[in-house]
Image (cartoon, rainbow over all chains, first blue to last red; front, top):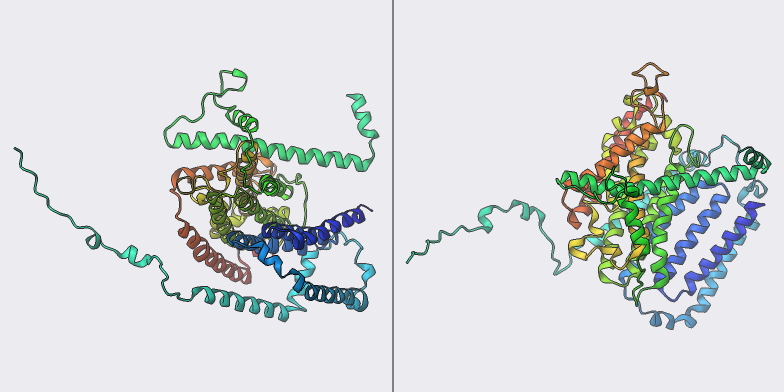
Length: 200
Length: 358
């Protein structure tokens, strides 16, 4: 009973904050609504006793990804009026994509069932059962290869991101730490012998 | 008294549990806030002694002639609460006022999963370590939102520095925690402490010594303490992200979360690496003796030691330059933790140290 009330409360907050992402005038506020949306969906997962997934969602998306998002958005000087100018032109395309996504979700959840017994989803776990342990067991046995593949894809992404930023740009100025450390006193300092002024 | 007991017995069972839970939560929060208050005093006193000064020595509790200066934190709090809250004209007012709360809530709610003693932990959840990682990573929002909403370039610069620094050190901290959970075999903090039972030689801090050092240094960096306090950087950016805050918002944005997070790092370091509430003399003294029994007192002593280290480091080291902070985080700590996780794999393969009992 309480779980149902909590579910509807957080679901309302989730839908509201998702609308806020689209409707907020200020990009930083939109990003903050997105943070709220991530957080509430993590709470929904917690209600389903998927505590590992819920907390990892907060850790990865809220704790790392959105921080960097905000980091970038705050540094940009975004012209909101210019961004809004194309709204009516792109709205039909957006509606089509949204409709497609809704269709996909409905298809997966209601039509396919993915081979799972949906009636068993709401039942609480047994006392000794750990969601985290079960997830790890599945991830490192049945799905070991896809898991490794995902890791390789991430590694490629890291290498690509680093090579994109490490390129030499013309006119790029940087401190040469080695040269700084290797300087001798003689390179920079010249000691002059100054004759003392004759006292009158 | 008798009528009170009768009243208590009259309440339904579920409500009793709720009342006890709320009382426990309030107890922990009040303890943390009092800890914060006296930590500010201890900081000023300890650093004063280190620099051969006296430190606060004027304000006494109710004018008593003993413990001069003991009431200084209360005087500070009352002063801050009575001051005017100034919102800059061009600030984003909503975000400006929410930011201190966003900083405050994660730093207090993390205490839910800390095992204080063998019997007492507010929420003994399975994924405790992950919960702590997730909530400490939320603390940065308070800082960057405060910096952005102030609409001041010094505040924004401070917020940017802080965000980059916290993201950098969080990875090293996460890897250090991965090392701990490899050794403990559990994400549950009570189990992490239990897995170190059997005396000082079984503490994780021994086989994971580099990870412990890295965890503590990353903790200093995450709490924005000296020598990593470039987010404030009084000499360059006029005190950074909280330059526009005053009064109660300053207290809740800056003082309370920062010091609560300090206590948190100083609590987690012993819980993860130095046996938490376990006694160091376990196994050395005959079982049943008072010194060998696990209790909150041992945890308290360890917390005090790490808090002292915080103050000691602040009084000793000059502030890092910003690029040096980034180099230390990305190029030294992350490779080091990865190497040590590899070393742990070798140790686990040959059943050495904490893996011997598997």
